[in-house]
Amino acid sequence: MASLRLDAVRKVYDNGHVGVEGATFDIADGEFLVLVGPSGCGKSTLLRMIAGLETISSGTLSIGDRVVNDVAPKDRDIAMVFQSYALYPHMTVEENLGFGLKLRDTPKDEIARRVAEAADTLELGSMLARKPGQLSGGQRQRVALGRALVRNPSVFLLDEPLSNLDARLRMTMRVELARLHRRVGTTMIYVTHDQIEAMTLGQRIVVLKDGRIQQIDTPMALYSRPANLFVAGFLGSPAMNLLRGTVIERDGLRLDTGCMVVSLGDNAIARAHLGRELVAGLRPEDLAPVAGEASGARLEAQLELVEPVGNEIFLNLRCGKQALVARVPPQELPEPGGTIALGFAPERLHLFDPHTEARLS
Image (cartoon, rainbow, N blue to C red; front, side):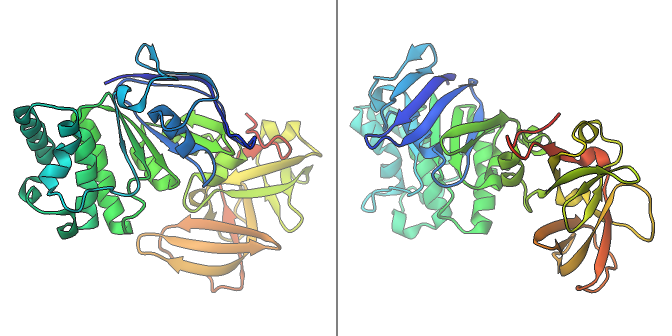
């Protein structure tokens, strides 16, 4: 196992495009770190620089105590699992698992021992004689993981390894990956565009946009205290409701969005921005229907669609061009088309500067 350190790591391509800008963070020995962001944000580029598959334009990358900027990929003691399984179709599972060790002239008895250990860890023991064409997608992905596992690397790099699987299998494989990490304790860096994967797998998450790091923190810290509007809107399903308006004082502090007036409660940040624009964020689960003239912070919107999904209901709401979503427990609700009042706890509001997009705290 090994720790990693990135210090102002930058990637600039020949055409001048900046793929990654000034990435600085540490990865602890044995940590499961996730790089997440939309397509083109630089997460795979960053992973490939750690692997040695992309050159680093500036900055330093250290694995353990060694700077590896100019170290060849094969000498970095890392193993990489790609989105495509990249298995040899003419080889058995056993041969696929041991092929990398064979290329390194590892003794046959050592190859057999490591292959047996990896097969046991990934429950592949009954499939060693099969070829990839006889395996399901999930089984092939486990073989790809096993091929990396047998090398006992200091660092695992995983580049969207579950994106080719169906939704049910992705859920199963997420559990298997988490279990594998607990069992082997190896440092893992995982790239995904799927924020659910990021939230469920990562001990810490690095959120990227346009090559720049937006925030690094634990999953729940990112969810409960997003650093800016991008993180607030990216993490969470459904996404956070973002209401842009002007802070006014009318029977207390309120946010006037033009189509609705949202009560802000006695909020010190809002009071400091009286007469100015703010963006208020509310998670869908923080909104709940209220009856009559119930006191407290509230908003009113037109109910467009009710989506019952079993243990919860999604309410799709609209006020002018502003779309909102509320997540509520099963209950009696008005028919779509009418107006519904929703209350919330003022302390659950997230307030952002509309110009810098930074969180106000």
